[in-house]
Length: 403
Ligand SMILES: [Mg+2]
Figure 1 (cartoon, helix red, strand yellow):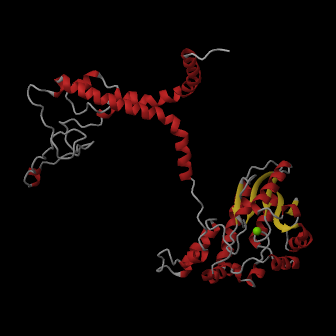
Figure 2 (cartoon, helix red, strand yellow; figure 1 turned 90 degrees about the vertical axis):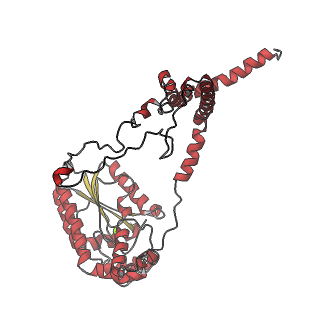
């Protein structure tokens, strides 16, 4: 067994420390580079009586020479002699004397006493070098510690940058504008803002139409605006479909949601406040089982056109598998035929969000060889997630939100 001598102890410490120092050396060298550039002035600069001597070389280029005017324009405008305009000549601008960059405005540089120049004083230089050495030592230690502290600093910074999700603002207070200083904005305009925010997915999640906006939403849905918005979405979708590069092998797919996309449930929502009431699954299922949802005319037109262009229609709905029969009948009754697939929620999908469920189904569709070129839905959860379509088209629906 080896005896523990001071020499052995030194070798042991060296064996532990050296590898760690070597690991940090590249970072240390990178950290010291700017310091070295900062402190390594040309010798003639430090020996000159110049206000630049404490500035690094590249900063001196930014310092104005004492002979230059204070506000010299980069491209001087031609000057018209004042006498030619019949005006007295303006006084020549008085230039402020040059001052060192660190001195307060208005301070003048004190001339060095004759015969006792600071730059020629060995004692002053020694004091200056001593202070510089101390600053260099402190900055070296600081920069050397930077790589070691970087991970800790990064963790702290990340903890501060990641915001904590604020509690959802009640949509009703948003519509009222009570806390927003919108008292002078008409209620209908505020509700239009609410509706736009809902359509743009800026309110998510929201549960019901604010009571203050019930009349606004009803008027929108039953008037010309809703029909016009639906028509515009269908028209843009068709224009994209006509220009889309089809493979022509029967694998170009267009996905359609069903409720508020192909079929309208407005008759049901007319009896439930057009989204004012909280969604009631049992009541809605009773409506679905009647199979009386009318077609959305603009969507039917789009559906027929994409089929004619050669797309395969795939219907992907949040309706349950138990409603397959009534859904097929309802679709057929209103002119929807010839889809390649009708995908409904099974028991295994029941607890998934619509975003997850539909993403998984789109992935399966792709795995079967389809190329999803278009997707139409009234919810963002119909369109977002994974295996997204090349283009997605959001139909308006200010009545409810499905995550
Ligand atoms: Mg829908």
